[in-house]
Length: 131
Image (cartoon, rainbow, N blue to C red; front, top):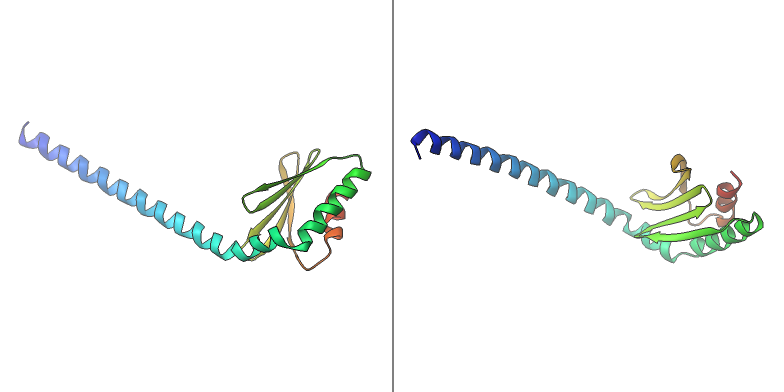
């Protein structure tokens, strides 16, 4: 191997290492941000899973869905509560600012609002299923 080939190979290795290091730093920064968000949302996630609001909300949604002849399917995806009723979907997601409700129709987001876990679960259920 000639000197120039060796030099070219070394330069390529340095460039590759610099790119890899930059990518690793970016990934580490992204993971740190996601971890910080998850830690900030953790109290709201726990409150969503264990509160009487959630139990009441599921009961109201089931009852209202039954009167509309619509099966409501609740699913926990990590700390997110997803409810599916025909072509409507609602996701209750804990965020660092509180619990947010996201409304979807035919897989397109139609809106969102902040959920008060001390408020009326029945009102939220009616707003979602009556829309």
